[in-house]
Amino acid sequence: MAFRSRREKLRIILSGSACVHPGSVYDAISIRIAEDLGFPLGMFGGSVASLAVLGDPDITLITLTELAEQMRRMSRAASLPVLVDADHGYGNALNVRRTVQELETAGAAGLTIEDTLLPAGFGEAKAQLISLEEGVGKMKAALDGRGDPSLVIMGRTGAASITSVEDAIRRAKAYEAVGVDALFFTGIKSRAELEAVAAATHLPIVLGGAPEDMNALDYLAGQRVRIALQGHAPIAAAMQAVYETQKALREGTPPKALKGLPSAELTNRVTREADVKARSADVLGLKK
Ligand SMILES: O=C([O-])CC(=O)C(=O)O
Ligand SMILES: [Mg+2]
Image 1 (cartoon, helix red, strand yellow):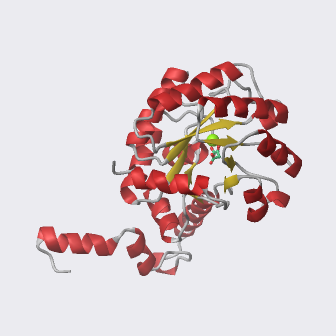
Image 2 (cartoon, rainbow, N blue to C red; image 1 turned 45 degrees about the vertical axis):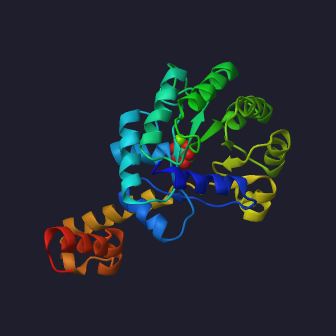
């Protein structure tokens, strides 16, 4: 299976004793840059998928087809393992099963299925959770949808910030019991909360954002956190760069005077120019 080695790399991170930061990836260019910089893993958040594909905020308006297609483009462009935020699995538990099948064939190394009610319910300003029973059904369906046993399936709960840490623990234990590979928590606000969650569970932990005083990787590693997200600054930086460049051009700056453009060397590296040239020499009869 072409993607197995990517998945095994993610499994090595999860079964190791260190905590790593993933690179935030959302398209073919961003995944190549993350790979070149030596990130051990890419994180493809639902928020950045929505931004990159639709230019939308994170309201789960994106479809599974669009998400999987974006993942497929990244899988073609680089071989960095990618953990995909598959949100609620795009429907009920049967949809979750299909989501796993699509992301598996699109080359994801792993994916998270969460128990938040998505898209937002009618008349509900605040995030809601589905029941624990429905969450368990989704995890079972996700595991059942997996064709390649090396694909990593993570159970994700946002209960810590929606209901309580106790509820997050209850849910995490139930997801653990049906056989997910790792637990992904969002909304953990303190060391005490993380320590409670870690003490009550057994699987490797992924932390979707943490307060400043919990950033030390050795502390996180000691609580079985193997992957700690750092948000999605690269796409935000890209937005600012496009804004500045278009603004300068609109205001009459000559293209040659623009600031912040990549060197030819960086552009060539990101586009894998040398590979294209070598291939063109071989198959198009062009000079290298
Ligand atoms: O999983 C992540 O990267 C955090 C998240 O939910 C998102 O960005 O949509
Ligand atoms: Mg998300």
